[in-house]
Length: 245
Figure 1 (tube, helix red, strand yellow):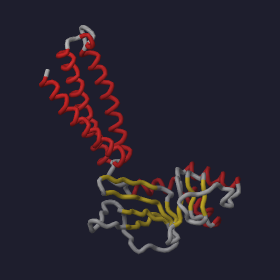
Figure 2 (figure 1 turned 45 degrees about the horizontal axis):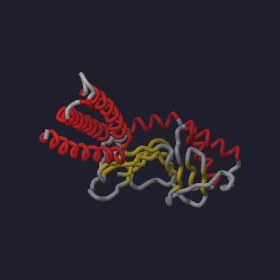
Figure 3 (figure 1 turned 90 degrees about the vertical axis):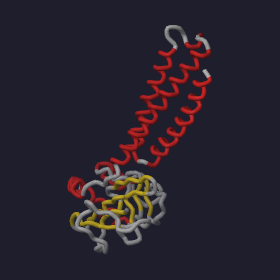
Figure 4 (figure 1 turned 30 degrees about the vertical axis):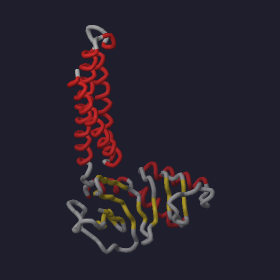
């Protein structure tokens, strides 16, 4: 029984460490890693409960002698540790599988499907002098603040706000922001980050030709370590894929 108690302590501490790493992965590893960890831990919890119930047969575990109770608890803790470890490994695979940016062709295909909506939104944002449209058209700002206000408070008529909302939801545009360079960003975004490394991709409109142009974002990687690099790749007219790494 003493050996079983020692194993429970050691495996319990190891399980806590694995759970901590799993939570870190879920928080910073992106949706694929988070979903993989959550799904596996849920399955592991159900498995552990089944094993706990089974370990008490043929009689209830609560009525069994103490050595049998401790042995049952040891099996439960070990099963939870194994399942949590499996969840962490699956989450790591999912997180790093999402580390590869979308291809230029996939972004171009999306752009062509929604180009009419993007162009209309671009015209409206420029005409209204907006610095930010957020929440799929719920809030607006003309001052550049990261937090927008209601359409009425921003001087946007209700019928025009409804057009913003309809176009942004139709094309799945979460936000549009005007940067210091007057470029409009956010028509399409994707990103990944883990362990201090990551990238962000934006579909961006710019009347001014960017300096850091590359033929395609496919296979591009930053040249230096420890600093942020930005490149642009033309996708049609004054539209670009902007990659920040």
